[in-house]
Length: 240
Image (cartoon, rainbow, N blue to C red):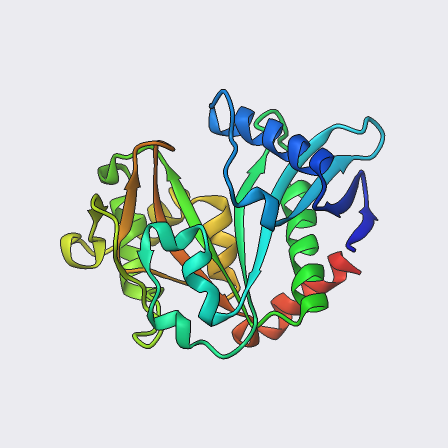
């Protein structure tokens, strides 16, 4: 089981009721909901990042290991047609419900979280990491440069590209006509998605408009073998 300390923070992983409840409580705060509970929690390993001195939970996410044949059982499969990825031969894991306490501003928290992800991926010999990357709110107009950049540089390869399944989507690959302003695009790119892209990640050609969560999200995948060597080395140095 994953367990390590880096700087001011300690990382642990759990599947029991206490770990799940702690993660759910932080998620409720981050997502602005009275409760954030679903049926996937029981099947996941929950990664918890605490401030060591105070014991305060500052970040969490969950990992759901799957094979390609099982991808229809993922959280993401509720929103995207993932039939193409059912043919993926290697082990995969869905990373979900990633959140950082909104009162925390220390960038080291995100770095430690990705170190924990790296430790999990290495231990389980994962070949594909995937999940949903969310933009705050449901107004696509606020993110047109970001979507244009995703269209031009980061679409999933056709052999793995998710199809449309949700009823309410923004087909940015077809509907955004502008050329992106790269600086403005990155300013409006969610931090989690930025990190995926730095690892060579790719996205669906459309965003799902999730009014329940008040987000726009894109399916995001990272083929572990395609991560740039320097980036892998950095992540593994954090994971130890």
